[in-house]
Structures are given as C-alpha cells and as structure tokens.
Amino acid sequence: MKEKLELKPQESWDNSGLQIGDYHNNINNIMLTMDINPKLIEYAVNNNIHLIITHHPFLFSGLKSIDFNTYEGSLIKLMINNDINLYSMHTSYDMAPYGVTHNLAKLLNIEPYEVLHAVNPDGSGYGGIGSIEPVNIVEYAKQIKKLLNADHIKLYCNKDYKTVRKAAFCGGSGSDFIKDAIAKEADVYITGDIKYHQAQFALQNNLCIIDAGHYNTEYQSLQGIKSILDGEGLNVTLMDVNTVKEIIL
Image 1 (cartoon, rainbow, N blue to C red):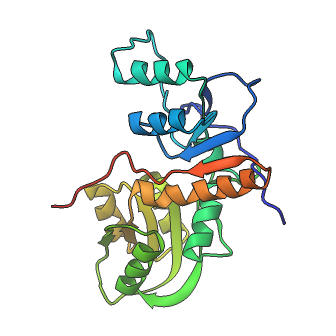
Image 2 (spheres, rainbow, N blue to C red):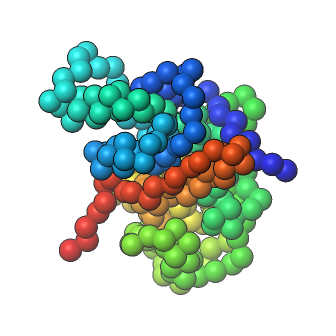
Image 3 (cartoon, rainbow, N blue to C red):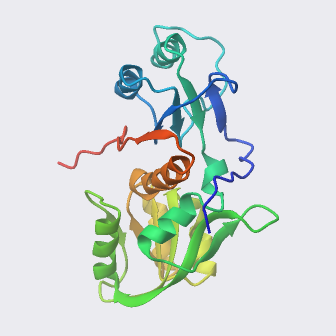
C-alpha cells in the first residue's frame, strides 16, 4: 500500500501549518529539517529552496512585533526577502497514520504495534507498543543506540540482566506517557527527554527506560515525508542537523 501524507488535527496548544509564506506559491524545491537556524536558511537561499518543512514549529506562540535585530526577526526577514515558505508538521504529523510513530516502529522493528496513548476518536494518538524477540535489556539498549545512530543513550533499569519482551516507544518527549507504558505492561519504554523523577517513577513500577534523545527518536520520521514527496516528483533535500546538539565531556 502506498503511504500518504495524511495529517491529523493538531493539538490546541500547537502551531503546525503555514508559518511564513503563501499557499498559492508554486513549489519545486523543498528542504526537510527538524528545526531551522541561520545556516539552514542560508543553504536554502543558495540552493533555490522554495519551501522549508520543519517538524517543530518556528513560531510557537504569538509575536507582538517583528524586530529584525532579534533572532526570530532576522530569520523571518531573510525568508520573506528570498520568497521562502515555511511550513511545520508537529502534533499533526506525530499522530498521522504514516507519521512519527509509524516510522519509528519500522526503524526499531516493532511491528505490529498498537497506539500507546490514544487521543482522537479513531484511536490515533502518540507512540506505540508491541512485542519484540526476548533480549537482555543492556543488549537491547545497544541495539537501539545503533538503530537510531545515536552518539549516546541513557538506560534506566533496576536489573542489568532483565529480559525484555514488550517495548513501548514514542518519538520526541514521551515522558507524559510513562503511565500508559506501565498500564500496558511494557518491559521497556524508548523515548527522549526523561527527567530524574520520571525515571524514578518508571523504575518503581518495574519499567525500564531507554532515553535515546529527542532528536534521534524523531528525525527518522522526516525520511517518511521525503519518500512520500519524492513519489510526487518533487525535489526534496533532507537535512540531518541537530540544532540542540549535546557535547558530552
């Protein structure tokens, strides 16, 4: 079955959709990236990019003014002056049938899976959970690190000899769904941005957590968008740029 870019309604707090530009503009060259920064916009200008699609919204809350001397204002000016459109697919793509969860499940080989936290009447929502081949938790964490091409990961688990058979997962910041993973009897939960007390709560409920980072658990979904747009005959450039790169000393 051919995958289609079918988005879901965004969350009320989100700001997906057109950020800068005109829906009536003709588009040929597209850049896909998790976020934008000055170097990425400079690349777009130099390579005749007409549309930048990001996962995270550049404009998250309302602006009361556009000051070209600010970080946001300077980028807005640069995009407008070069006729670059900016569109974001955030929670609308997180919950899409072939969105973040679908692509992460394929990459981690957790198929079939069910939705971890349902939001919409049709059962769509965030994350997934499914069965995996029984494996030692430390070995599994090493596999996840390799699959996600992560520089480093964090493993929270009470026992390094534990065997895991059921894995929950969520791209990005999935700490809100730790209780769902516990309720669905997952052995391990793969996500990003886990805080100390959240990990503590998981361990108290016999749930191991693999924190593979926000970027690493979401970036893979951009390849899904690229594949769909490539099928429409568009010229798409996928940028692997983590704008919040961690340096481990």
